[in-house]
Length: 468
Image (cartoon, rainbow, N blue to C red; front, side, top):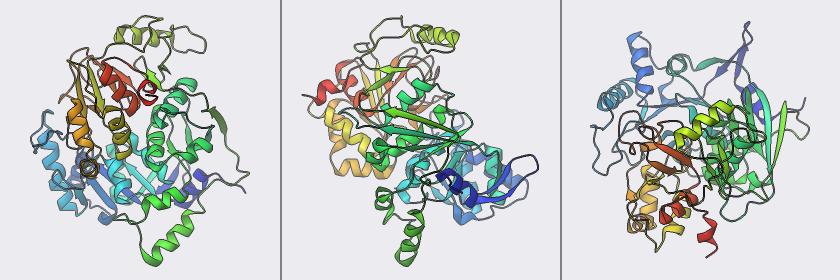
């Protein structure tokens, strides 16, 4: 029988089907971070249980850590130090690999895992973080879980899961200059709704996806959760193997050849049937920007704020609330809307390729007077590479703050944040109410759009800079 890539990954890890209709799935690798991982590890210890296979468990300090250059265990996040210290102690006690604050490999979990070669095609990987689907870009079965599920996975290396349906989203055509994977996924969510992928495992395919480099594919899969998908996945190819070759945790020698031969089989069969198919024509796609408080509140950067009852719109009440929260009026052009701050970072867009495209726009230019702009590399290795290439000097000369790695102001939970009702253009993945500060108004966009907007001090079409 013809199978989809997801079917193959699921069947490979199926231990047994349960009477309640769920499946018991074997978990190859587990990643933790200090915000939720510490809870799972402490609960496990309190129950007198041990981590079943500690060599397959990894942990990052990323969510609560401050990203100031002279950071320490002390954080601006209330009780942040307690989380950090508890995670460190539990990780050492359990014998799991920890990428601690001063470790040169430290960073955001979904950046570090591919960077170190921890996630590999054909593996199952879970983490108590909703954006674990990022790692599906490697051809892995990766999804986010809760702390109690993490505890169960740590103790048994299995999880009971409801098998989702399958969806294929084919992005066809060629992307124009200034259009990126971030624009692709925002456009998809805007077109089919934030719940369009609910109940599905989504395979991203098509000519436009094939042309993307690995880091762009991670951006695409990262926001599958904003589409409400169980996970996102992309079939591994030569780019995947080239990316993994030589990574610290990647196989070597004969084991590499064996693994690579298996990885090349991981693709949907030509006649595989998906439960749903979507096709997106990217040939006319423009840079995208959000106007409201959900990723589905997205339009082309040349468009105006839409009416709550615009054709195809759903949830009129929610859209009216978003307009009020964002302080916008129907028909207002987004291009030219003044901003107070710009942020480049998060597990969505903080890799070296993201920093390069932003730096290309910033080179020789300055951000608008009075604007606050921050760049937070996704890992300390990304930071070191950017500094070796001189990108940090471009950012700082332009007026950006250059930070150490971490989740930073991707989310606000009482620590560092942007100001009350400040308008921010950001490369992050969520623009929910107060996501980046108290009633902060966030507009999601790609790194090149954020850089262009920082220079002008207003939402700006990046093509204005790229064409010149």
